[in-house]
Image (cartoon, rainbow, N blue to C red; front, side, top):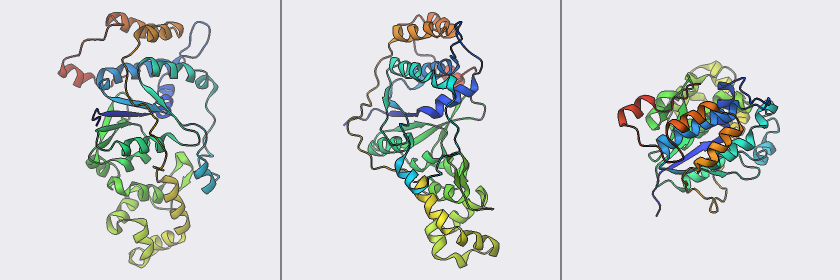
Length: 308
């Protein structure tokens, strides 16, 4: 059985992060190149730090029909992709493939669901998920952990079970109910009015779950809070369904084997997009040959610094 560790990347989470971190970058012909540049920087760092893993970049493809049937307003607040980013997506996909990563997507499924299916199906392997999406924290266990961009956008924080409790006040098993209580504005999911992170964490710590809360609401000590929770019972049950990842997708045909980077192809894309600093770095490292491993101390000090 293949036990090579996996790295699963929530593609659009990282694409948008890079797009907004690097602005006003374009070729001499006026073609936007900021998101391509940011992705190239990320891919080089991933190759350096995680290139010995298998895995894939996972993309959304179309709208999630199941969630839209439950709540037509789901994600309705999201603006369309900016035109200057849309024009870079195909080049980004070429760049991802050139670095040897697979691209995985499936019609009407969100990337989060696919990541969940792959991670849980390979639960005997060490799995890292690169994403800033709180929903994915529900997957964390002994074998599945997350890499989450820090606030400065230059590093990645490892989120395991202990870090999940430290961050949210609940374990991974409580994330769905926690988010159902507070809502998720990025997905247009309303929470219970007046219930913030501390109150939600306190309720889950005391009762264990939303189902337990709704089964015995009289045990909620604060009368005002009790009324808000019981009045939002229908919303809470809907939120649970929207936030819970769908782990039923068929994933047997997906290739997770990481290939060696095709540095001539990477150089060609960098030249096409006039990414001068990327080309300079490649020359410095004497690529297309594989770069020498850095000393452990240097790697620890420079890990995942993007220098945006």
